[in-house]
Amino acid sequence: MKKFLKTVKVIFTVLFLAYTIVILYFLFFSPKEERFIIAENKQGVYLSQSMFNILTFQHPDFSDTYFEQSVSFNKRGDFSKGFQLLNKAVEIDPKLHLGYRGWIRLRKMRDFDKALIDFNRLDSLTTNFVDAPWGEDIDFLRGECYFGNNDYQKAIDFFNRSVNNQKEDWADIQTFVYLGICEYELGNYEKAVSEFKRALNQSENTCEAHFGLAKTYQEMGNLEKAKEHILKAEENIGYKRNDIYNEFLNEIYLSEILEFKQQLNK
Image (cartoon, rainbow, N blue to C red):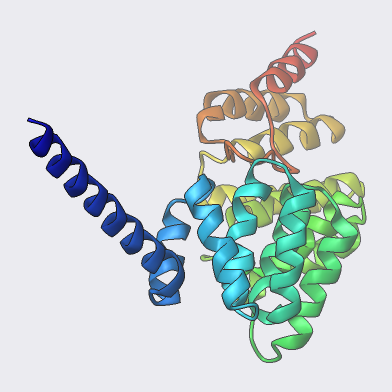
């Protein structure tokens, strides 16, 4: 019996050592691309972060590793740690990573000035090419930055550039919503109505455009039209621009629609 137990112990020891050697080989010596893909897919867990640390140590100029490692920190709001890594990625390959950094600064940090610096620098590095940071037209994002800074005329200029980039039928529908809000804020109510209607031409379910029209028609003294569109805004609130991770600058809520509706019916 003792001999059997000793044999089992030796077998398990050998298996454990073999397993350890395989893991160590994979962590340190397998192709970096394979390790990167696994670390990317396990983003945020201890193994993933350990593999990223090994990769950055072995390949300090592999910018994608710093970038991908930063994502989980930025998603959970740890921008101090996230930006240590992201800034390194930008330093190594600015054309590849400036757009994401600008997008994070705009959408998550609301640092509109620094976001603009990143977008403008990216644009200067990619002449004769329309960039799309994180999948969105760069001029649309710059328009949002100026909108966030209440510089409505500048915002209008960039939103119009975005429409020119994408063409009318392919432009982000929120571009026209933003244009309407900007014209409304500048007191150009007829123009605001025209822009909101451009959004509705793409989709009648655009509740942001209906809400904008309700407020605009109220300012123009057309309460009948204002009531018509506030009802449509309420009916279509399920189609609102929404992202579980980010609150948009032009995001609307049912509570404010109902409050405005009550005000109109007084």
